[in-house]
Every structure is written in C-alpha cells, then in structure tokens.
Length: 285
Ligand SMILES: *[C@@H]1O[C@H](CO)[C@@H](O)[C@H](O)[C@H]1NC(C)=O
Image (cartoon, rainbow, N blue to C red; front, side):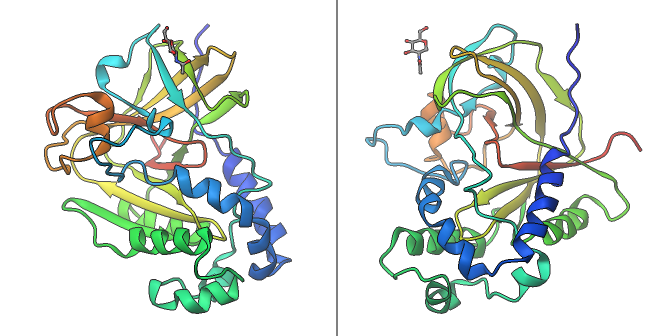
C-alpha cells in the first residue's frame, strides 16, 4: 500500500494553541521555564552554518547530512534526531507581544535583565549567538529573516513566495520515537520529491521564546519526504533538502567533512530537525 505524504498542519494548530496559552502569561514568567531547555537547544542549532576545525571530533548531532546517492530504498545510515518536548520548548509569542520586546544585539544587556539571565550564563551566550545569526548579512543568493512570531514568519514567507500564493508546510514528523537520538535508520520507501519552484526553510534558534531563522537560497534545491525506520523501532516521516550546487559554500563547511567529499564538488542534503518548518507554494491551486 502506498503511504501518502501530506504537509502537516498539526504543528500550526499546536502553535495556535500555544498562542492562547502564552497570551495569558508574561515573557518574564515563561523565560524561566525555558531556562533549562535553552542549553540543550543551543547545542543543536545552526548545523547548516556550522564550521568546525579539521581536528575536532565530529559531533554526533552532525549525523543529518547525506548525498542524493543515498536516496534509495533500503539505504541504512546513522542519523541524529533530537527529541522535542513541546511542553519544555520555548513558546511562540503573539506578534504584538513579540514586537513589544526589543530583539537586537545592542539591547542584550536590557534583555538579560528582562529575562533574568546573568551576563555570563549559557543563556546569555545563546542569545548572543542568535543575534549574531540574525544580524549577519545574508550570503550571496540568500534571503534571510529572523521571525519572532508565527505571523511575522508568514508575512516574510509570503513576501518571498508570493502574496497570492497558498502555502504548504513540510516538517519532520515522529510517528514513533524512542529516546535514542542517534541510531541507524533505513529508508523504507522510495523518497518522494516535492517539486517546488522555491521554498523557505525556517530553523529554530535558541532564545527564551520561539525564534525562527528563515531563509531562501537561490539555485537548485530539492525537497524530499523520506520514510525512515530506526533500528530501535522508531518511525519518522522526515523532511530533507538537497542543495544541488555547493560551489559557493565555504570550503570549511562541516557537511563536506561529514560526507568526506571535496568541498564544492557534491550536492549536500540534510534532514530537518522536528521543529523546523519548510514553506512551499501550494501545489493544489
Ligand atoms: C550502525 O550500523 C553499523 C553497522 O551495521 C554499526 O557499525 C554502527 O555502530 C551503527 N551505528 C549506530 C549509531 O548504531
């Protein structure tokens, strides 16, 4: 029987529920809840951008990369999928509340005081890193935006994909997940390519409330939905992207080391973590 993939909307429903929940509280209060979580989140972020020195042992969390050659039924590979507990993840803020809080590196001292973090805390470092990623200028051929609310994410996505375009969203979905984050997974079915003219990928960044780094890269990108079965019985319907042209990429990009390919010589694909969102123009117009 063929398994039909469809973009999940449950995450949006979930987001709307969180809206209601969050609007009843103040940023200061839930900032404390996310305190422990921040450190964990910090470690998982921005692998796509990450650059490591050649002698550093590879972080297991970098087991997200592959090449188009791997996209076949029965292919087995070790992959890392962080567990996501929505009850401890940073909450989405409604736009008006998010817009009432400054979001810039220049306001960091004020924000640390606002969220009650000391300036030497891991949270302060994480916030500084987040501002770094948000404030650094986009690469050639890249458009980027940091969204501090779902509404601002959608506004920017529509600017990029078209104001009159209906949007679909793709995510990585856990059908069944054990606590084992790194394990061997086998591709169960022929990976399904989602043919899209362009897409916007939104990655979570560590911050006391939900912040997404959204970007669109020019050039050929292929979006896939891939059925995975883990050796611990985990079932994941994963979203993944292949960047077909990596010639412009930094030669020290960690993906080339993980894949053991000459920098710029090979397409680079990666799975999306479970809390990322990939926006595409809807195919059912
Ligand atoms: C995956 O399987 C290979 C051999 O089949 C094994 O050497 C490796 O340790 C496994 N990796 C993980 C993360 O379990």
